[in-house]
Length: 266
Image (cartoon, rainbow, N blue to C red; front, side, top):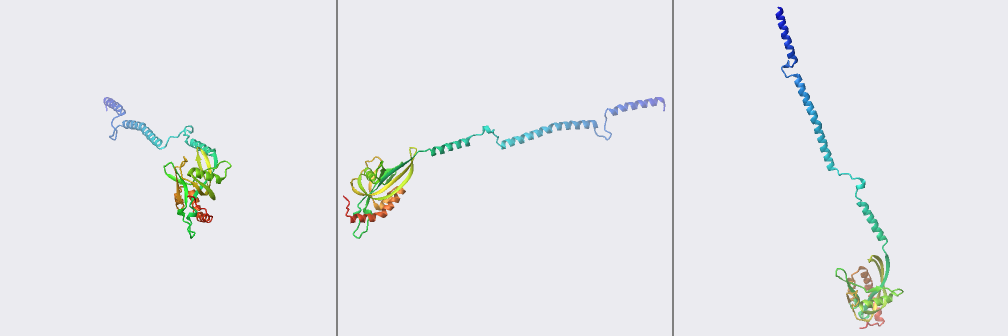
């Protein structure tokens, strides 16, 4: 090989080396490794930037769902004080009940009877339908007429018999004389903010004279009622209990009146 050929070969080699360094085709026929690596790095960088963003959004959505499901906690100082207020009101209500004024009252009255002796037959049998009792009727708030026994307040140091005779006359217009004790009832009620315990002494009175009238402003109506209808006519249970007792006493009382010759005035 001549010197010129050697120098020409050497120049050709020098020309190829730079071309290989500049990045030609891959020896296996694929793309450049540098381009591959560069593309992979870019993809990794891009995916690395996007993934935290998606994770952040997912966490925000989860937190939002939890905040919707769970009610917000209030500071203790901002909690409503309804329960304490209710307890205070209940306490005040009980204190009002405990300091309510209490008073006792005593009344007396009873049943004035007419026709006792006349109700006894020759064989001694007593016809209760022939014995009459005077009752008073008052209207309640619903407009119903409620029948009851006449009675009234006992004045200081007044005997119960005297009260019964006076109150029967004032509420019915009939004068009567007490001849037997019937019974006592008591009950509670509230009037003008005062709790009242009332005791009523009931008597049986013998008719003396008089005419029925309803001049008492507290009385709506007055009537003679057959003793046989007395229990069903009375409006109050405690008075009906006394009426049953009177129902059992009347036959013997009627016979005693007849034997004593006490004829009912007409």
